[in-house]
Image (tube, rainbow, N blue to C red; front, side, top):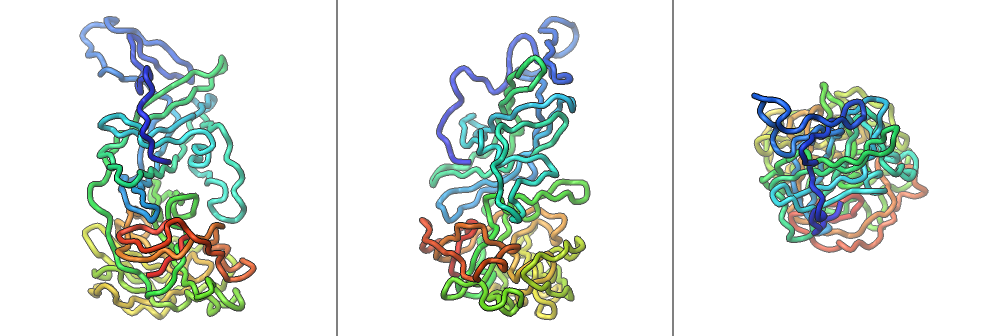
Length: 424
């Protein structure tokens, strides 16, 4: 969702107005009585209307600077049809507005919207990486009583201020038997985070590393909607999987069915900031690569891991470590750069890598996934095809097809984007 300078079109109001309010009932527009129809009853506030869609955000939208030089605000909008199950609607456009001046700062429509929205419980095609993603259906039709998630990545050009409040303008048509009935609604005024993201040191030793499944496209981290304890969460929204890369761009050498073929295996992980160890799990065996293991119990999702508390309400997670290599215990205080353990292939992991992210709780489930940046690194290139945990070991060779990136070079206080190869 790119930054846009356009303003609302002349003559279009984000809320329906007029002497008669529009009521959506069973998919049919009904006219309610106008002013003066009753006495002793307070009139609704101007602009009040019945809307076919309700909306809610799942996290506090938090800005972060990425290697593309833009400020990203990545979050989710849950929209629910309030119409009967027999009455679908067509969602044509989602616009993100600066809530103070109602200026449009980003929008999704047509194919772009279709590729960024899906029914809850129906993952976007290709998010699991098992098969190439087919074209998303266009237009976006939401069945009555259905709930959908719209995956928003607001990317603001360099120097563009982040709005203090975001609003969401939805437009489309209710598909009635007599024909489409257009609607527009402006919903869900949402304050953005004012605090800066954590700025961290490297979570691994110096060298070349492949940043896989990071923000902001169709990856299992960014679009991993999880129902936990009766709530929808995106617990890995900004997580990154780290793979060690050799001088020839190789992530593995030799037999991909052997753990020791992977350059990441038994690489040390280190504290990206000083803090206190609040959780340690050990004893989960490594999975044999390169085929995906059975989904483990929820408690073993990230396998052997270490969690550090580095600020109030901010925790660093190091997942998929090798059993018996964890060198810290709960309650230990660690310094930045201190070794914590070695990379393994435990938990829900197909090939050895480090799962790293910031969390808002000490536990992986339930948690939120706020942004973070790294103080210093150099981008070496980019991998165009989506090569990640589940298919890395099934490539013809272990050499990543690294190509030049427009963002090659040194970066400070930035978040690495998906499939970048960088050097700490």
